[in-house]
Image (cartoon, rainbow, N blue to C red; front, top):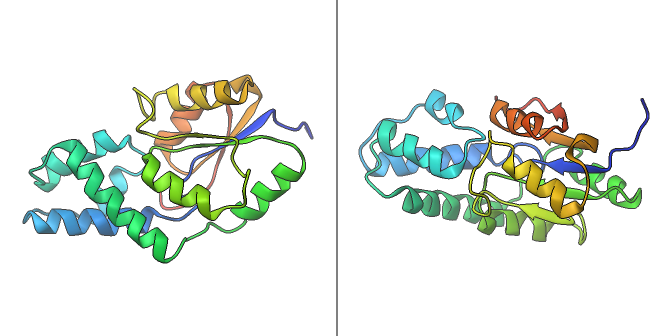
Length: 190
């Protein structure tokens, strides 16, 4: 009780920024362009997924006849455009990041999103908010595998068991727990 974590490892979508509605809107637009069907339940079912895996679901269930990499590129471009218009910050996230930075607690971003989106969000934050950023296109196995969280802890030179992970999806919680982190699950979309 009262112990300060060695580091705080943050998920991004739904935790630092509330981009899940942006992702869902882009998914609906893409599926509609291919004449498929995509429900809100379909969209919620892939929250927190590795983007290539999510693209596979869009291809199979939504009828999007593109390679998974092209699906991810199109979705990411759509979300980036929306974030550039308005960054949907989660309540308290920037304040907590600033307080952790002032206390000398290092933070890392651990996101399934790819670098183009993570870069836009990081650039909108105060410099030094994150000492490390691990994106879905950097790892070989995405969430729920522990690799993203293990990579972040390694980048900060800390033991994952001494880290607090902040997550909003069951997939992300499983990833952080499998890496050995203490997990704070933030209620959001799922």
